[in-house]
Image (cartoon, rainbow, N blue to C red):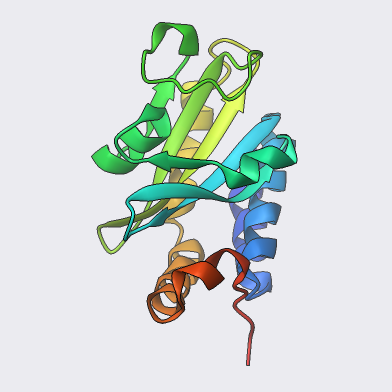
Amino acid sequence: MQKIAFLYEASQEVLSTFDLDQVLQQILSIARDYFHIPNATIFLLDQESQQLYVRSHIGWDPDIASQRISIDTGIIGAAAKQKRPIYTPDVSKDPRYLCAAAHINSELAIPMVVQDEVVGVLDFQSEKVAHFDAETIDLLTLFPLMRPWRCKMRVYIHWSAIVPCNLRPSMRLRSR
């Protein structure tokens, strides 16, 4: 039942507004509430620089908003480059882990792919070793595959292509 409730609530949030930042923040809030994930970030990919930048986050200090990660580094970069989710139950045992905070012990990075193109990464981190069980991983991995989400991201990609890079982080998509 939790799966259905999560997917329903997430899809309703995606469809409720054209404000991309509001949608992303709501998705992170839903993930936090349903799965008790204290730290979550949505990174979007700057195609030109091949760097992931923070578009939305929850549970982190505001300083994280300036973070940029090359797709050649870290667990997040590896998920983007390989176009597959990467789960690290104990980050102290994975040399790819980029330490965001000393208290983090597990990480799940899920690429967001639209039309076979990586547009970003959903990143979830927990203080608990092996925080994510198989069912949670499966459910969180399904989210970026949902049709409403993919349509919303397709619109974002279209507008990103015609808006200069320096305007993208503050860009809002609004209904007409």
